[in-house]
Image 1 (tube, rainbow, N blue to C red):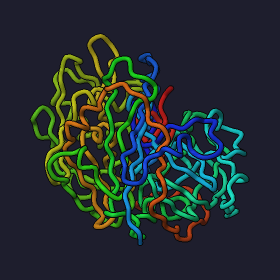
Image 2: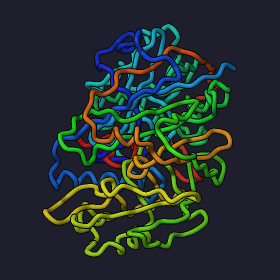
Image 3: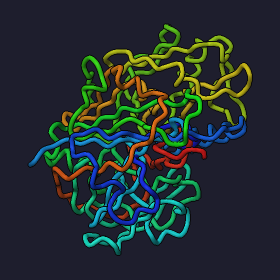
Image 4: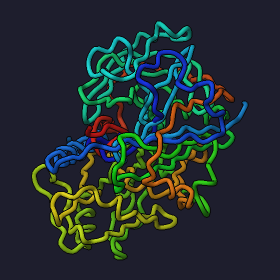
Length: 472
């Protein structure tokens, strides 16, 4: 999960913070297999100084997160909300009996589910809270839960309960019941986070919701997919806008065109990692390292794209008038706003272009803009690149359980037509249960987990990195 300003990134459905029983509109929620719209929230106007603080927090949060020096089968869709102009994307899950809905950041860069509890007294104001006393199926595991992100931390205990999403139900799902969170970690109406990475990186050591469903054969196809909307360049955008869709068990053919190009994960699944094969800027090829130095984490919970300093510097060397940032902008680069920047990335198949609108992070003067690619120096065996929503808004992305791989396809005209179109954000979309599974045993102490053999700390509250928190 990456971090900091509110630019744009991850999946969650909007629900009234006052909901205490069944999800809003639960009786009329689509059945499994239908698409669920995502919501995006547009941020208020930010000053240059606000952007500077956000940029600094985003870069530092990602560095910390990735270990830097600092038998029934079915399908289902969860509509996403776009929060604060592409800063984060969230969806909805329902927990307990009777089910209660919660907005959660959808993050492929982590693997734990957690929500704020009724007993939370720090950092949980104005969000929907989980009340274990109101669920007849809740089981307290009496084990500590403690997870640290680059932008803060959350602590509580581990519990198990029925968790529903997009028409699927998993009984005895282990999740964090958070009783304390750092200030600013949760931005209403988001109550928590749903990790969509592999169990090997779960702090709780429990099987993630998606992995339980995929491994049990509950899905028609062993895939989950994202289509994310763009509002970063929209005028008069609201705090919450339709964010796209997240599907489980199938790919929505109306949202992409052509074929899906799948590339296999290069090692034992942990993060969703792909080797970056080529990168072009203004049509010019930029040299990138090979082997493990090219590993890229495909992270819906991160807003921007972070990479090795030498490569980022070479990217901006192709853009006349570029200058390295200073102060809070250290690690970022500015370039003339009159320049239209065209960047494309390949992970072994087609070269996928990034819209110039996504490359432009923000304008800091009448003539200078800041790019959405920044220098990130991860440590140990952490991936050299963190590829977030700046890239993912430009493709239909598919995360496949077996064989373990990530696929991309070109967005269809139907999907592209959703960008920047002001509309009502989606309501809660849990879906009538059409397939169920039982989670395997999990639990265990929940100190910071280790990814690639190095200590990591996922970022939730940061601006760019991570699933979710935006600068409000």
